[in-house]
Image 1 (cartoon, rainbow, N blue to C red):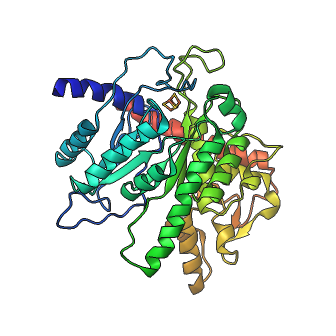
Image 2: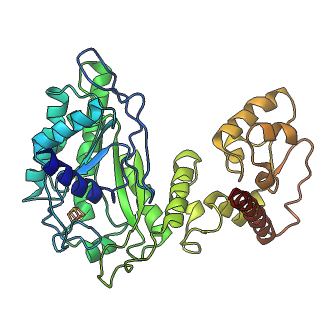
Image 3: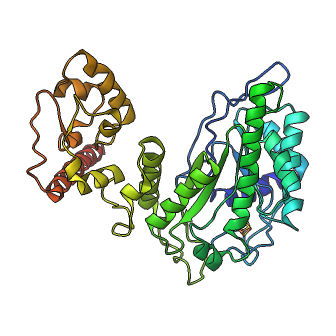
Length: 417
Ligand code: SF4
């Protein structure tokens, strides 16, 4: 029996690796004497060679699917080996792996077999059994099956820490091209139902402590990048509207890995756009934590991110009129917008300058990447050289500097062998 399960595991874990939305942060499910596991500590993430997260037991219930999304390895027209776990098998596997300390939680997705409700019902049963029968208190992330009934979404939310549903393509046009059986309207409906319930139960919990938690780690979504012709502007404007409209915890950007010979898609062998993926995550970070409006970074004149430099530097070079920033007087929000200064350094600067004017050596100790920041700031003992330089010269200077740093590291590495 275990041989068969091992074979299924190989097929269904491999099919699940294309989904990158498995971050487990943001949930705090405390242990008590009757339960096993604890999401509050020790959840670690590991990554496969191609950068996919495999920290949790990350599997599909099945890779059979009635849909035929062109970009998906589980699409019904794809000639791949199929398998399906039973509910018992997933429960047993999760508990076995958990007891052996292999995993801290479960990331459960599925192809759609028969219909959305039939599939979703099984995902919910697994989560329910883990929580109520096995007293499993680890992390559970359930992928919502698009089109599943409202009741099943409510039920799933009682047992899952996080729920997510994939947008798949950043625009309706892209989705129509590659997955005409799906729609963003359906995704919005499902996200909306869960979001409303989270809000409703959260306010009830403020009055009555015994109201159960509902999707405590919130919702997320994922988009495939580089399969269709969307610009970075299209992608990030979509992300922005979903963050705002559905209070999402995360949007994941998954560089398309060619798996199909269809000539509408990048051919097999083309590398996934990992650098672009990284720039999108940096932009996402600027929106969520650095108070940037997406319009400041991407617009019709700049529909794509600069792959050579990070989006904050790119924004600063396009706005020389906002610099120099005086470290000793500027407000916190402007300081953290300076390339080379992060949130923590900006906080330290604002706290420390109460006691006297800050100098270069002091801000360096606060974690500021001065080589980069010096083009955009003044402090007590610096003179500002940036204004008389063209942004292109600063850009070249920073690029030369980072490339020579890379060359230095590379040379050192080579000398080891
Ligand atoms: S519905 Fe999901 S599993 Fe099925 S083909 Fe589309 S993306 Fe793949």
